[in-house]
Length: 208
Image 1 (tube, rainbow, N blue to C red):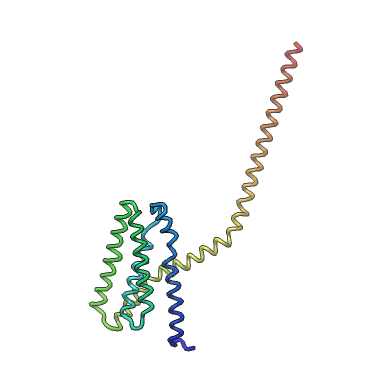
Image 2 (cartoon, rainbow, N blue to C red):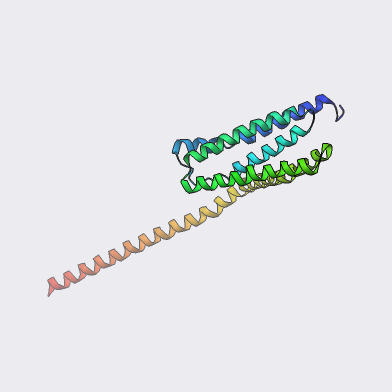
């Protein structure tokens, strides 16, 4: 099957959309927890603003291309999902965090996005604009790719060293238990000696 075969492209396009959808849905447990506890706790809004910006930018790129229906659909879906996340976050966030999130949205998702659309519309046209926007999308997507790689590496290291860490902790715990047991035994011996001395003193007094 040739690489430019439409069926080949369709299969990989569907797989890519499925993976992207799973990535968009990954924070669902986090927002369910926020909803249940009525608090954003220590969670930050930056990842969701960045994800929304990436989806908006890729959607803009998809509108410049031809036959990019799957790109349009998945990024429209991503924009809706990330917007819902941000709305939930704003509902339960403290006032200071809420204001920070709104400022971030206005500067990043609105201001920077509008600036990119304006500049690429004014200074590039046709296929050149498509290429420029594609490179911009690649630049903003690279941190997500690096984050995925580092996340996988972190999980691998965790599973590799998890048992070794337990092996190190257990002897320390055992030594502490042995020291505590030895201390209890010394206390018992001291009490026995004190009782013996007291008994001896009483015997001497009675004899006198």
